[in-house]
Length: 283
Image 1 (cartoon, rainbow, N blue to C red):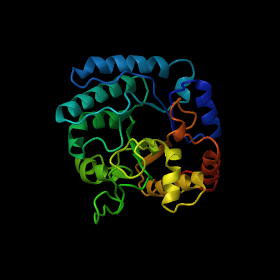
Image 2: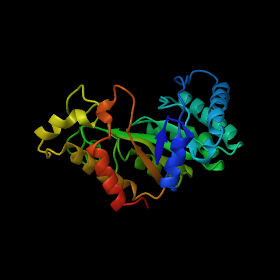
Image 3: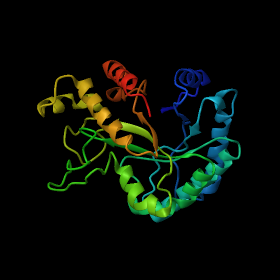
Image 4: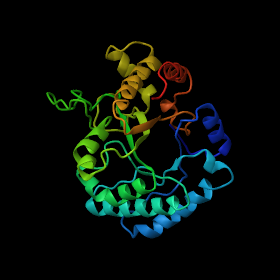
């Protein structure tokens, strides 16, 4: 999949012409969602803004689904209920115009697992209108931190699950599945190494994967830093492909915003990723 804030339909057309099965997700800039107020007027405003882009010209031909707010913080029952009502109404309004939604788009480590039960209205709506659930999965100093036995607490082993990357398995197995949403199509709408995830080992001020070069070297990883990152992405991809409901993931980032250069894939990392995708095409 590809997620972009660059809504030029030429970009979408280029992607679809070269990779017809790639899922293209669009997001427009929106202010932070206020989950302390009535969510329905906010949903109508967001849907109106999204439809203006989604239905303009030929863009609808190339964009498969649309996000709303990025990484909403729904950390209480009341906030999760308002977010669910927001996403349900937005999904309905877009769906009636033939436009699909990606709901949630929660930050890494979110939402609190016990709050999934309050997100049911949004899950029902996105199922009705053939959309997707979206989550972000980052970790650091490597993508495997918080997975399996790589835990902050010695002696703890989470098996084939994680608290940051592969956290979605906990959501599906113990919460969404029992609620009847165990096959809900999932998009990992952002993933990679992100040092803002805490607590974690490594330099306190590190952000993207490039900032962990010296830490990786000091811990015995080889000097090919893009290759080390590619190894982590390959591991993550191999895990995602074990779960049929995962329909795609988007690595952050390529051609990103100023100040995020340490996350950039452009260069040797992108060359390695391209080689990997040629040899291991999406299923």
